[in-house]
Image (cartoon, rainbow, N blue to C red):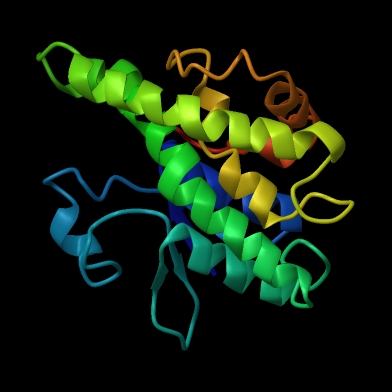
Length: 206
């Protein structure tokens, strides 16, 4: 198996999952958005994005959540629960993607990615709107984490990795979440997991 990745938000999650599960994958640094390589990646993912998981005899698999499910299925265990907890986990995966991470991604893009590739100033309207969204969903997550260590059950699951997608970039991206003490404590717990704290250890990121 090969896992094509870049050091960005979603590929970071996929690499962290693979490292955490000890998945037997070969990590391949990819640049599918580079015009020089875009067409060679199109057969693997028509969106020319990473992450992409390839396995012999199977169609290439793209999208972070699908890859996480596939790797979790192969590994077994509790990281992706398949009992009654799965409904709760999928709720948090969906909520994180469409609310918490969606807002955090604006800060990540405008404050970290834009300066590397664009000469325009930061989009203040987009940042203000994202801050308003975080002011709504941040307290929701913070309240839930007040009386639990992990989002689902007594151990970290993919729900924790997925909802925390943007948090490793909170400081450099100026994502306004540090006022939420329970979220910060929860992410400190996640950072005790080597695969989450430094998923690219030993891998190429440039």
